[in-house]
Picture: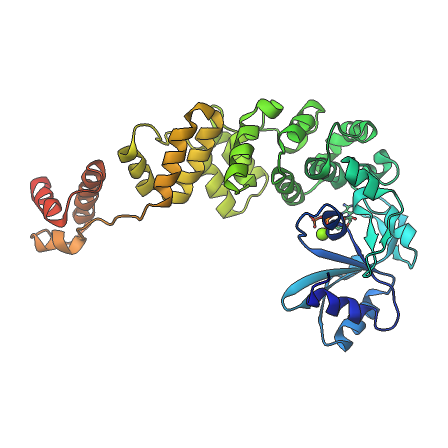
Length: 399
Ligand code: ATP
Ligand code: MG
């Protein structure tokens, strides 16, 4: 059951008889009947040949990672990563020297985990040189080859180990891999923060990341990527509670999960430091600060909730309710009412404008704004009930 766009890429790449194979996430996830994020294809043809074959078939070929042998084919605005088979020639940290090859086994040896080194022919035949399928079914995340060496070649793999364990592992983590991760942990500080953050987000997006974050903490790894996080406490943590809530609502959110890990005293100061250190985007950074800032009032009843909704907007309100719920599971019913209130909420607008104030004889200027904002405070405190007439009367009284 291959989609027409995928078929078009496969047909183009194999037009001259080359065998191309699916590899990586698309094979792994399909075997587990999980959704596929993107499609990676492997081919023994060189990037130049790949480009020519795609163009001959009238498909777009973008040299996204030509140095690493990757061409992105685009069909109906769907991207396909087509990578030439590679073998390692010499490795030094991230700067592994590679050479193109037509040897599928050599290519498989460069891949990180057995579950990521399963290839699949277009007819569905698997090529699985490291027993990835058995590992996948058993929930085992194992490095291809020697864990220590593979991490030394590329320390990002250390983080990928926890990401894939969180998504596909069951039971304890591979001891050899864990030991290698512990040893190499200080090397994580050499990675660019952008790569670290990108990887952490994928880990945090896992169905239940709390145990793996706990595992990173216990093994002295977390402090090298998220030194700001002091306590995690695995399945008993607010993170685990938040994940369960998000699961119930069907809305996993890595940034919110990171925020809950900071939900202790002075979180906003720590959040600011962390956001700057990890070079979060402006949007992410603002949201992180809003999520961890103190003084957000969710107490009281509908009147106070509507006030919070009006002042912070429904998105932040929703986030703050989920965060509060995660640390106070007993309050579930109340939090659900809050969420329902936010869902059905349309922002009211103050029935008075500056024009009305000026019409009352006030000179245009700063004072008009001040008066309006005083009026707005009163209108909010009155639960947005005052009509235009009430507001005009109040204005006269305030003037
Ligand atoms: P996703 O579902 O997130 O796309 P994926 O396994 O396809 O998961 P990609 O980052 O798209 O992940 O990488 C595609 C494949 O390339 C991986 O499955 C793996 O075989 C290989 N790979 C990616 N990054 C590395 C790495 N740092 N070291 C070794 N192999 C890697
Ligand atoms: Mg992929």
